[in-house]
Length: 301
Image 1: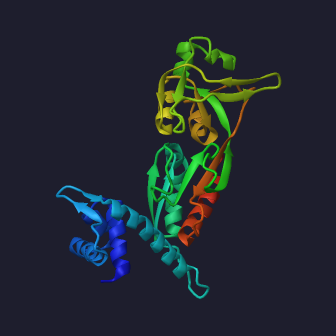
Image 2: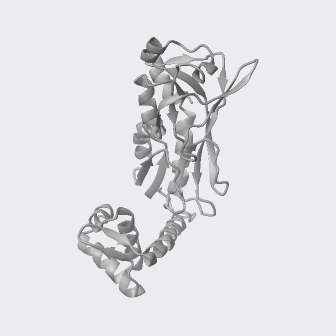
């Protein structure tokens, strides 16, 4: 038994939740993957996986072993690509998680450029606005807006997102145009609420002009926890939106969104790429982070 192949097969089965899917990504037969895992279990004298006809679940021992295995495989990959005499070509699998609007508007449209530059890197992208546990979920890096609460993470700032307030023409035709931010608090006007993952609740937005500073929460009849759904609700006329420029620009240019309170300024939102602490940054992760920085730098944010 090749211990490296066996550990790689085991890790991929855990991640794929299936021997068949793992075999496909490893370009092996299902029989070979099954045999490798069985040989690994026999050597360790521990049951790593519970198998049924429908699914594969990792055991408690298997979960603990998996955490060690993925780190070992990553360290081995780093060792091979960091030698001065090796013509290092970034390769392998990256697990990343990004907000849904950022994926839709910025990252995914630019991915063909990344693939052309680094054809041997496979990206498994989680697209959500939830908070991902980078360590427990074995994610290589995340892109997140707002201040990072987990100070143990390593982070690189991508941008300060400029925010604006917008509404669809259909909403303004129906409800009228609010002339002051406070109109969103004490009148018939409505906002689309965004449920932040940290709290599960909408949060107030800070605005200021020369005379005053305000925090506006607004009243809503709809609140969502996904950025793309949030934008769609605003375009459908469900309420007033607070959007970064990269989400609003195209819709504003087409007349689908109208800017409000243009004599007021909103606090910008920091955007970060973060990755686990105390871990050597692999070549594939390093080039991916550098590429994300480049893409964001070329985008109006």
